[in-house]
Structures are given as C-alpha cells and as structure tokens.
Amino acid sequence: MPELANKENVYLVAPGSVSGLAAALQILAEGLALRLRLAEGARALAEYFTWDRIAQQTAALFAGLVK
Image 1 (cartoon, rainbow, N blue to C red):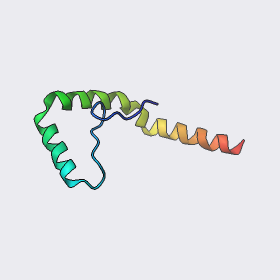
Image 2: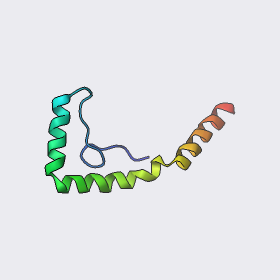
Image 3: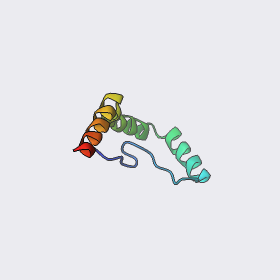
Image 4: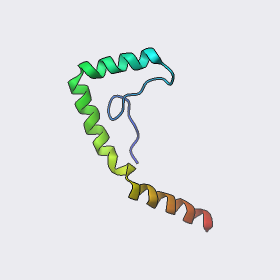
C-alpha cells in the first residue's frame, strides 16, 4: 500500500495547531498547483480505501488469526 506523503497526496498539520491549520488553509487557498497535485495524489490512493478493499483486508487479517 502506498504511503501518505505530505504535500503530495495529503497536507499535514500538527495536531492541535490552530496557527498551523490557518497557515495551511491560506497556502491551499492561494495555491492552485498544490491543490491540483494533492487532488491527483489523493485520487491515486483512493482505490486503497474502498469498502471492498477494507473488507478484503479485514477478512484476510481474521483468516490469518484463525490458522
């Protein structure tokens, strides 16, 4: 599974950082190229987070525990 990559498919902000969130929102509001890159990267990851994929992974996990 591919990893989340800051400023490639997600935009990370430190937990609880109000000023960090405000700065990130400002950067994203002004940065069309960054928003497009994030959208493209997130779209590429989306297939790994479908309910079918999650159900398959969960079933495989439980099957492995039963053996």
